[in-house]
Amino acid sequence: PTTLCWLRRDLRLHDHHALAHALKTNRPVVCVFLFDEAILHGLPETDRRVDFFYRALEEIQSALRACGSELVSVSGHAEEALPALARRLGAQEVVAARDYEPGARSRDALVGARLAEAGCTLTLVKDQVVFETDEILTRTGKPFTVFTPYKKAWLARLTAGDLSPHAVDLARARLQPLPPLPLPSLESLGFARVDWETLHVKTGAAGAEALVADFLLRMDRYKTQRDYPAIKGPSYLSPHLRFGTVSVRELARLAWENGSEGAATWLSELIWREFYQQLLWHFPQVAEESFRPEYRALSFENNPEWFAAWREGRTGYPLVDAAMRQLNQTGYMHNRLRMVAASFLVKDLLVDWRWGERYFAAHLLDYDLAANNGGWQWAASTGCDAQPYFRIFNPVTQSRTFDPTGRFIRRYVPELAGLDDQAIHAPWLARALPAGFRLGQHYPRPIVDHAEQRTRALALFGRPAP
Ligand code: FAD
Image (cartoon, rainbow, N blue to C red; front, top):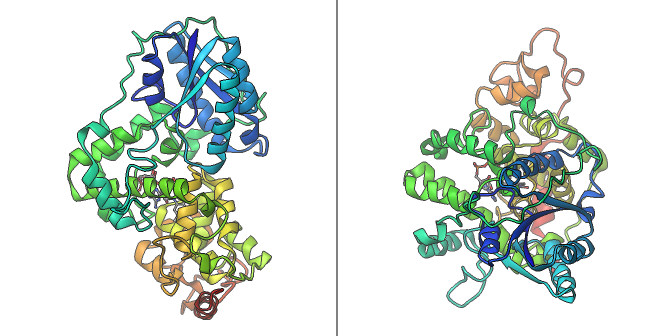
């Protein structure tokens, strides 16, 4: 008999709760990855996320091979493929890290039931967050719906033990010896390789480690630098947190032990991540509709031409366009710009936040249902602890404040590179434009007037459905 360690959002081999737990069962352990048809089927060939996690799998494969074992991969639907594999390998237990998304929860319930029919148990352990499900509740035992008290309770509960690693000593681990079982090629799975070098993205646990080392040198300055998209302020660890190529315990520990203001602010961001994950766990309906019932029936205008202009970065608002082009070109968007772009779509273009949410979901390398939904509902003022609806970002003021010299805009909207530091934020207001530059020809005029749209947004949100 064996124990299977089913890798999902924990694509590393160190500080790994599921693997550490599996190794304690005293049966030889087989590490398993499922190429899940239900997830991969609808993705385009160019979806970069598949290659991102594929690189992590290759890394895991070679580490296991060095220990005489293998990463066993299967394809299909989880509820069929895993029980079949469990039978084939004589597994008595499958261990995996708990997932808080509604779709993953129903999948795991089904897989658990099917495994049970095969005489095998599914054990879920906590790995992707420091605190989960009912660990942080209000005094009356309810889930928090406001961030600040949640964060306070989170920090009050935290002890060094919560952040200590689930150590795995791979060299001594009792892994099932297996002959080489190559992973199916990425091409055979229907996906293309990505040139990560050009995108400046580091993949796998080794890539995450390099990013952590680099960020540690800047962590003290995080609070003052994180809002400026032209500066290397944040950690860029989001895809690694998404796929578990880094351990959140390790990151939280580094921030906690550092103790600087920058580190405390960064730790807060990791707590936001958990806040949204637990919100999704307690209120799975947010995946489909507004957290606030009064905003569920807002009649957005949903102008398809405006939506297309937003997607393609040609709204005529330079910072918004730069943001969207960054997303389209690289699969990343700076946090400040996610807020600006989301607010612009909902409050300036009056498009349903779920349309924007879906677009981000398809294009972000770090796409995470909980964080993306939380971010969109925050910006749309429909979520818990969201931006009040009457506080509407002004895209030009945001641009002047957070990209003062237009450095970021120039990078992604090169047709504006010749404009001076004033004109670049709102070319239609400029007294003089460079010779040969024609607004409306070389770069669009604004597709909407912010002041006008603001009034319309206030009217829309000001009389929500009863
Ligand atoms: P850092 O500033 O270094 O932060 C460290 C980590 O903290 C991030 O990697 C992330 O895991 C977490 N984090 C930071 N800010 C938030 C936040 N506001 N909410 C939740 N977690 C946070 N983040 C995603 O990981 N996936 C998404 O799909 C996603 N969609 C978003 C959509 C909108 C509209 C908004 C406003 C925010 C969204 N975020 C999302 C949150 C945030 O923008 C990204 O996590 C961050 O920009 C990633 O860059 P980083 O790793 O350099 O962040």
